[in-house]
Length: 210
Image (cartoon, rainbow, N blue to C red; front, side):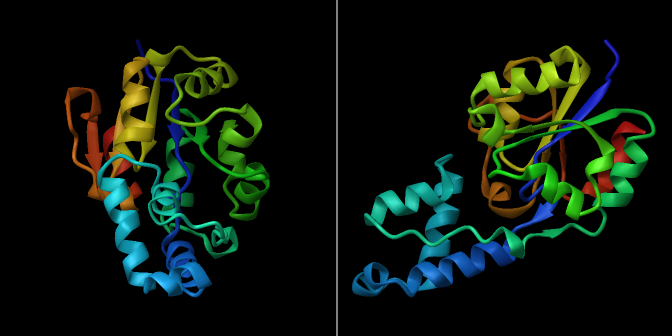
């Protein structure tokens, strides 16, 4: 069956979150609970890395481990679009419909518009609007219904083996693991986590699909 739609995650796929997580760790380390425990921003960052490697929810695992009752916010205003993203999306959109499947807060379409890439997408599935989250297969089925495509006609491109690759593969989607951010630390722990393609940059996608 021919491919019709390429779906993208957002964080660490289209958008660089490094500044967000560095700021969040600094802010968390400055809070009284972290100070009492003697935790530095570096300690908290390392725990996020460990959680990612163990296929655990990144920040929630850290909060649970230390029992934080005050949690530093995710400052989305610090996110920056990967510079190659617009050109890659423009090229791919000439041949495929493009979509988004992402665990994101309210206002995803507005953020995509601010980054100048919303026009490339015909189906935007945000967990906020769907009321479910990756890796729930119901969320992927919701995105497929928005795109009007069968799973075998689609590809999931994302940075996490647990949230992106495994659930998409289980539904029959093709998969591309984009090794950026914390997800790059993961190692496939079984065949169900093995992607069809592995890349280190968005710039490699046209070479696969065009």
